[in-house]
Figure: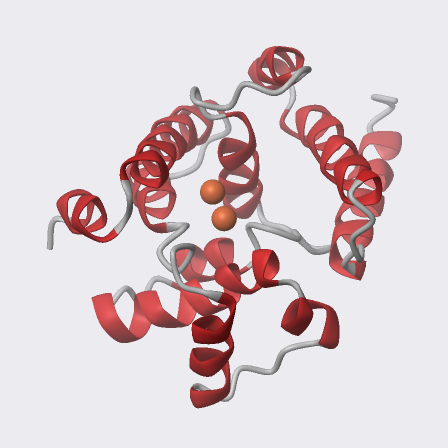
Length: 190
Ligand SMILES: [Fe+2]
Ligand SMILES: [Fe+2]
């Protein structure tokens, strides 16, 4: 199946462009950090598969598929597209690779035991070439040298923006950040 043309059909222009950028960034990061770059490209292309669904549609799918969802994820549709996307990728596109599905399911919050592959997708989503927020260039530079240092900068900004907007912070994001701090401290990188 050609996932790129499938996503082009499914998503609006801007979201498709973001997915292409994420795929490209994921493949580059995978190359640098010894992960399967073809697989990372695929994860990047499909990671926002469910993003164009409305909050209600996302909840409907989640309930239909009996996805165990915590109350924060239920209420914040921005978070829901990740776990729902993962189940739809399996159901509708037949993608069964557990690494891809897990990376997609956690690409919004992260969690405390992120694999390198999951980290690659998380970071790629954040720094792909179409992202233009203040500070992105600094994270891109960091990503050339150290995956976890770049991720720490990214998750700090992501958490800050959640606080600035008065939204609920998902505990997985805190756990992800703490795990990065622990790893970096153990490696004397802080
Ligand atoms: Fe997303
Ligand atoms: Fe995304």
